[in-house]
Image 1 (cartoon, helix red, strand yellow):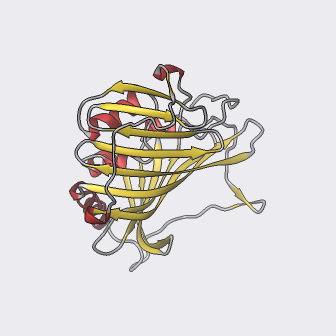
Image 2 (image 1 turned 120 degrees about the horizontal axis):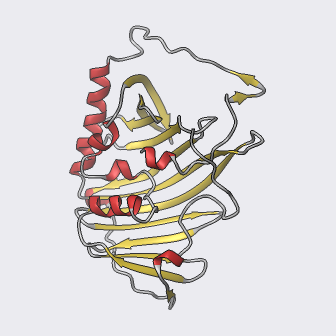
Image 3 (image 1 turned 180 degrees about the vertical axis):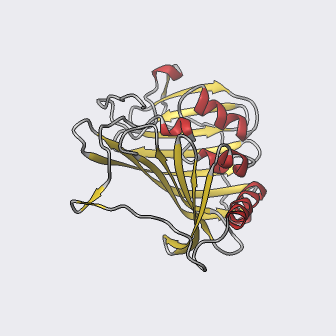
Amino acid sequence: MEKIARILIESSMTRITGAGLALLIGLGAPAGVLADEAYAKSLLKNMSDYMSAQKSISFNYDTILEVVTKDQQRLSLAGSGTVVINRPDKLRSTRSSGFTDIEMLFDGKTLTLLGKGKNIYSQVEVPGTLDHLLDVLRDKYNRPLPGADLFMSNPEEQLMAGVNNIKDLGSGVIGGVECDHLAFRKKEVDWQIWIAQGDRPYPCRYSITSKQIAGGPQYSIQLSDWKSGDTVAADDFAFKNPTDAKKIELKDLPNAEDLPSNFVRGKTK
């Protein structure tokens, strides 16, 4: 999670303002509103167990990447995409924004990245499970799948590592779905998650706020059209190259980020 936060641009902004006003909220623990820490942990574990049990998953997503410029202007860069997962080792995803249009396919052995705008593609051998692929994408190729922590075989383990503070903020509604809203703190990031209530406790929204970067920019992903099990349409995870795309080296394929190429990253604190 901290590695995801590091892609955000450094800024000199020191507070968030709304309509020209700075708002500071103190969170107490009124009875009937905030559940205890153990209950919040149980909600997250319930989501993790549900996600781990799903052999097939598909959804649409929207992302917002916040950056803060050196002159303290806060910008929000939007992207969208789709994901289809077939455990233990199949993945198809798309990602589009104003700066990228990428499709990714993994058939359990070969990872294919297709740059649709330039009709180019690259392939590398990454035999193994989906967990292994997600680690390689993040750590080796710096091309993380949006919200990757949520789709590992044990999301709870990924999410809870290093957590030192937990809050249950009650209910919230995301895309018309009533959710349990939880907030967590780590040394380098704060993160929040909205989990659908009921017998399908999937993550509806997940946000990460950097504490390493001045101004605390945020990355968020919101899921919609969630399907699992037999409701997931059959998919083909092999690359067919119907557009006669040109094969290139992975290092020459434009990165699948929501940042325009003329943005320059600053340093963390």
